[in-house]
Amino acid sequence: MLGIINQLIMKKLIFTILIMGIATLLSAQSVVTLNLPNPCELGGIETNLNSDAFSIVAHPNPAVDFVSLSIETQEPIQKAVLQIIDVNGKCVLNEHFFSENTKCIRKMNISELKPGIYTILLQNEKGKASTKLIIN
Image (cartoon, rainbow, N blue to C red; front, side, top):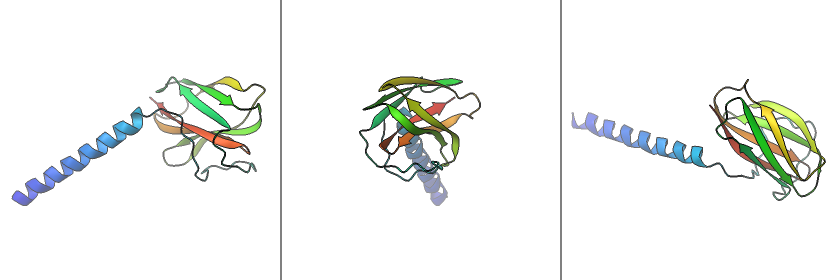
């Protein structure tokens, strides 16, 4: 009987630690630069891992039907790939991106995406930037 109680206590402790970790991840909405291989096909763009090339911020976050991306770059983006990647590493949106300015806002319709946690990744030959997106 004591063994079963100890097992239940351990399961409850592990569950609590897991929930606290998830809550910490969900509350972190800062810009993060990834130096990992991209799980999506980039259509021939080779990436230099220069993290100072640009930054991206999603708002509102969490979002429901639309999200605005605030993108700042050192120089106008001639050719880049904008992707939304789910938690399983599957690319659910992949489109080409360019901007004639160093600061821009891109509004995106995300109503077709299922609720969950996603990574928005913008990259080109100059570098890459990413941010988390929560869809309710």
